[in-house]
Length: 409
Image (tube, rainbow, N blue to C red; front, top):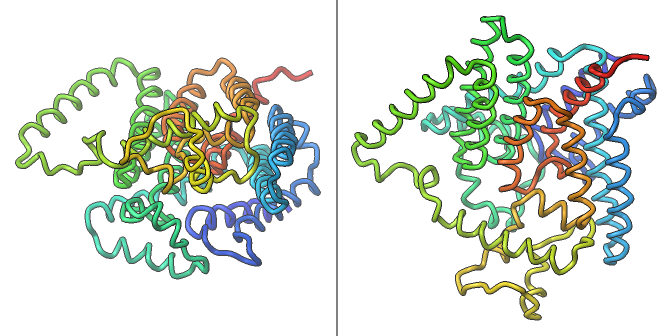
């Protein structure tokens, strides 16, 4: 049975990573797979639930809080069910990943994610270099999916859809997967600091994953991809990293200054005043005042884009918005923490802080991984406790490690 659960979990990750828009009876196939895997784990070893501290308490409180806030705001039954299902899938993914860690250890779980992430990163790099066949691989996977991206989503993500996505649906899910894979790769490096082979393979893996992230041209993910290994390697090997980092910065500066026509370098990499950056400042201003207007939250499936029409017509806004500040009518807030606060209110933020505190629990490298993750997620809609299912796999590793560190009775 445990072998079947492992294969089921791996199949779930294939759909999560590559075939996210394959639907059956109105739900993603990955949802059915994780529900089945979770049910089998409970049948085989229900005691695993008792070892998932503090996940049980956090998710139970979020489920209750989300229900109460949603009912208070007259959210429909469909919206409540959808919100609770998202929480359930995240919880089951954590539970199944934790079960696999107990049964097979870290290497098997890491292999599941890395075996999907590394090929996608390599394809993304080739796409960024303009290799046509790499885009054909992506097109083949898209043809296998039976739910098209809606016109509304295409409008919201017009620029994102043109960036190299590797083998994922589009560039943003690619960065989430690759960052989580990098976290597991660094876990492997941290646990084997004296093994030269591990260090070289880990370093090579991080370079490939970072290459895929840079190919996606997603600035927050690029920053996280630099920060996460930098914090880890600087702590483990300061005598090697500091000189190498200095040389790399010097060479990069020289290359930029000497590069012919450097003004043509992709503006997303060097320009923080483009439409994307300017739009985010508007979105954050809008998101903050939405929270300020209703600090107890709006409930599940709150849509900031739809709400903006009514909100600004009634002139209830606290901040001034210029005539060109229209991002709030086009795209969601793009901040996972604000999304959490919009759904659950200030209580959601408190639960997130407590959750992160329990996950870090005095570990410098868990802190480094979480900081880098937040660097990315505060600029996007998914994050910890906000439907970042790839990061849930990393959190399962953290929980497993914390449980093993506890003294046995």
